[in-house]
Length: 112
Image (cartoon, rainbow, N blue to C red; front, side):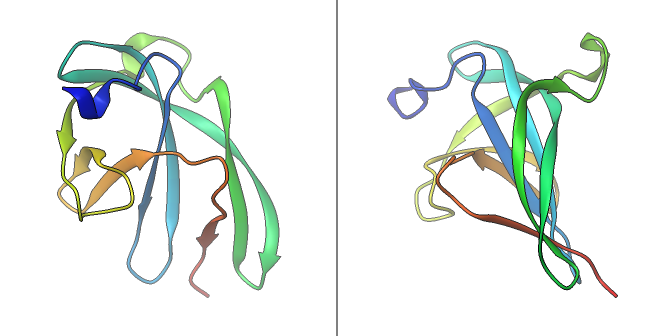
């Protein structure tokens, strides 16, 4: 799986989801095999960006859960054209996670 060669323990994925608002969750890879990864949710910082919106960034190694119970085992998928990232993780029926780009400006919003 050449498309996933750069994914290793420590790689961060972001998952944006929501309907009337945008929620953002971050996950860190804790281990992997050739075709799958184990991830844990991590915390993030937020700075006001405007009314009901915040710029968010992940906090590497700041796991939300305190043990391995929070690990999720997911299959790596390769789909060009779906997003800017050729690799994604199917999180739920309505969301996917892609590799976090530290140069990107990620906005989380709330519904009034």
